[in-house]
Image 1 (cartoon, rainbow, N blue to C red):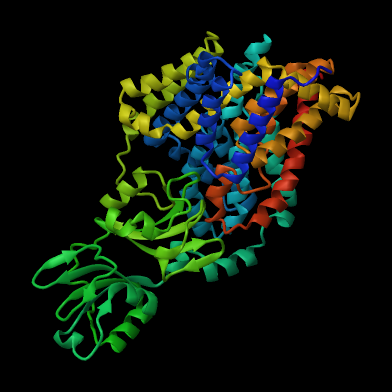
Image 2 (spheres, rainbow, N blue to C red):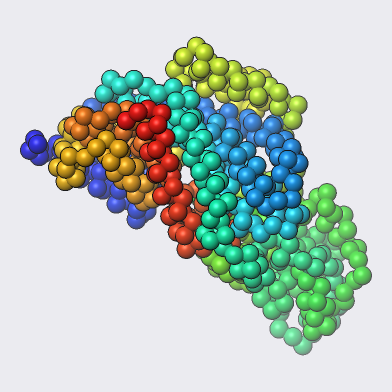
Length: 602
């Protein structure tokens, strides 16, 4: 084994720093990638041109195009049309519903980002759970896991697989085709579904546990606002006589009621009023909450409860306003902040009703609760302002806002451009990025979505993360670091058979993807495992393929975007993911290695 050179030591130090920053999250992961991209040429480990080559890579352009195509399919409602026939086939059986929805989500996830597929089906699953009386915990986790597994079905289903061929180029290895991974991916999806059918009763939360959680902590509309509604009250002229000033936020804390509209004399209407609004005589207010609490407040505060909406009847109609449940999106700008810091009420003109966070329900002091990914927030406001909040994508709305400009008349065109992109890949065997960008451009030119909507759909944090880490992979190979680590690992495990080596690589990839992003794990590991395979006289393409697939094996912790998205609505705890995820992870590795052995003959 070659001796350590200063360059190898510096590259390994950079890898350690990157992994450490990914884990502790002192700065965002995309910022870490940019730091690495800038530091590598400054240290002389790559040239300036190599440092920025990621922005023009086939993988990065392909991911941008896939996101835009997915946005076009979403905007036309093409994917949502699959829900009705799927439910018609599924009937009322919990297992059949889970199977059909999981297969549908996995299929969609094989051509677009899995978080997008999971988010699209979240409202539908919530409605199915309500209408069919099926606990959401029995559906969301299996469907979420299948959304992740669906990314292994085609070479454009997940960022690691899109990136795979790009990382094989320096080694002169034959690239993989679009459907080369399909047999393995389909087997993984079916194995995931089978695991929940056979062992679901043991690894999923029990319905009674979820029902208890819902009764006590759910922020969902059915649980929190059951029996709740709008009520209008008139404040008498002598309201402020012989009493301290009454502030709107105090009513929330004392009576668990939210003032959603107020009229100050003579005719100044606020929707919603500020939290520090002082209630005075001859005002009218509209509150949202339980009727018993409204009656109690009316008696104790000396207010007149009206029998129906009068002053606010034209402001609180269902056509103009309503309540929605929103989930804090993974990697959103609001993570770690409170509603007071976001300035939700003043900035977006919406009223927070309740928050479900980490197993607890909050109905008072909402402005002081730090938000984490997967938390649910019940919001009330007019549809226009709720749509503005939804467009920023910091929250994923479980209750759909129908005011979004959908283009169902363009659904056929969206499907045609997706088909054209796939035909170009399969038949003409052109470069993947060129084919996918053709489909994305076609959707823009035929007005399936506008160019601004295409820009907004792209997660630029992911793009900079990927482009920033590609130079680290170049440095790892260029300096001989990958070869040195490969020989060190092989010397440690000794002379093993190819199938054992690939199993070790699968386990190593799984561990890496639990603590850092799947893109980061792929970039760091592919050069390493290719060198390991070459030294052990094993097919290096299969070693790289194991990394590309196994970086989707991220079920044990709720750190994956899909798991974080479904954690709140499904009322899951971290222990639930550990229990189910550990079983699915073992099944994943066994099925993956078995299918590679059967189809590729390692």
